[in-house]
Length: 508
Image 1 (cartoon, rainbow, N blue to C red):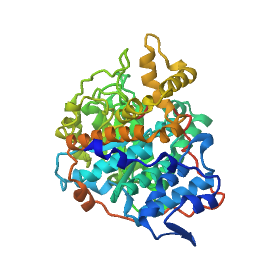
Image 2 (cartoon, rainbow, N blue to C red; image 1 turned 135 degrees about the horizontal axis):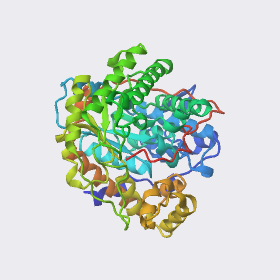
Image 3 (cartoon, rainbow, N blue to C red; image 1 turned 120 degrees about the horizontal axis):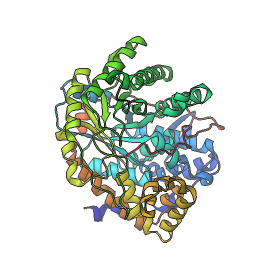
Image 4 (cartoon, one colour; image 1 turned 90 degrees about the horizontal axis):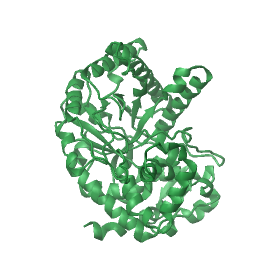
């Protein structure tokens, strides 16, 4: 099937046209619709859909090739309003996760949480095509704080491009967007003073931007504040900072929900056992969960408004471990940790455990996640690899240009004893933002082949993770709300989430 559908999942490169002012965007870029008195009126759905690749490009950050900020803001507003009218509904998976925790949804499945770093419009189209063909509703699409920086994708841009892709593929119903690894940086916070205050403020601002853009789920990752290596401390002491900060951030989210008038309850996750480091133990889970509850009570927050899933470490690492030839090493996963965490979490109203660092695992591993009660599996690097290896690096000169860029800009990350292939594999995510325009505008035949490969992998993963034929099930447990961005003023500005400088690897 894939060989026949690739060309149907992409648009012509000529559709990627960026405008320098709003009048030209409305006059030449917007088709099949008009704007009147702060409202979008669609009179020709097919023509409007045909204009979506252009609108998505004008919503995106391409560096010096970008549309001006007020054009970006208007493009994002148009896409958002169009999505409401074409039944693409941003929503929260909170109700579904509560139903899983309470046993009202009793199905062996793991939500795929897909990070999209590169070629976002094309990748999302392949994702939504596969979701439609397999009737998938149990699906989350996410971006981590670190990814927002090096991919040059703000929450507002990411939400707009995802909604555009959904409309292009005729995907309808709930669309779950998630802030992945919304992590508070431990060093500046522990340093305190002005540095710590700046980091806390930046983290607050990021949460605000995620909620304002329509993200219905946030993973609050305070795991770097664990003190696991200090074996003389009790379990409670090792988890104290993690639990305290998680509770404070839960309170932050709930306050912002009210302040911004968010129409749903945002799904929240926590983490104990920093990915790529020490594996999670039952004692860690108990100390963390009890610490969150105690701190929420201290803050006057109902514990029922706390986290509904918990990420653990079970032997994986973000992006996999590169071998000297640049390939990825096999890894042994302690699946019993996932099952233990899911079973233990029922006591605290959790839907299950969360797996990070999974997309580079061998294909025979994925069916084991739902069998071991992982409610969610995070997938990122594998899709990036498909786009780069099967597409971008097939364009003449692209690989050498990217690797020269990495050697020039990130040589300090080339660790002693590592080959260049290992260095290039580990750092190439850093090129996704600087080379974003080139990737969006690759020749149609290259992009079609990548879309086919992505489609096949998405369809495979949906089957392995048990989410085929979940569209109606998830719709049953999701309340749909209208979600509107305010009409942007002529001089309205839009910016990334204050994290472009953050290049740490916090996504899978």
